[in-house]
Length: 237
Image 1: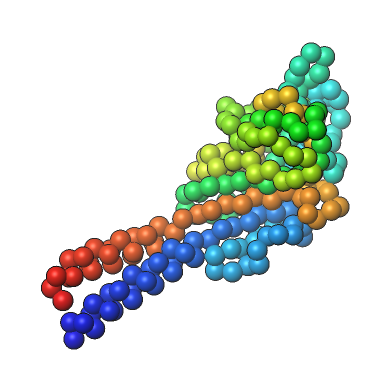
Image 2: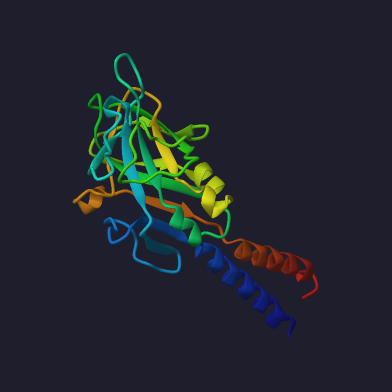
């Protein structure tokens, strides 16, 4: 009988390990635009389309023009006679599906051009702190944004995807009330001036998406309790 109890506890621990392994990876993408390569929906990987997704370029070199419907957007640091250009993203609907702390979050973008063939790309990310509209926002009407943090820093081969770290900005938005969620801004922190595809791209594999990893605290809790019980009873069974 004691042996049966031992194996029962071991089985519970194994089950909890399965729960941990099933921690969801969630992929958010513009509605009806699931990019190739995203795993099929399953217990550990879920793709969710967002109708509220928005992205737009604002460019100080054409400060009154609205670029929200363009297939491509670029980010540029202000230098010499050139003014800055930024890229805005908003996928606030994602937080309807996220209830636990975000462990990691990456904005995946396809880079099709830059100022040099193999640029050393450095990009920063900041939270947008005021409302904006994809179809009308311009550089002159650009919303304010908070302190920028490093999001990507690496040598880059053109015509490839990059994964920009947006974890801190997304977790900060998750903890905010809905009225204060205005999205993110992507800033060029170097001289690469990358050209990126937006959600308007007609080529599916070029469209952006967000990959969010969320831990399962319940699974870890049950696992640790089960491990503790097994440790206590090990010498008594």
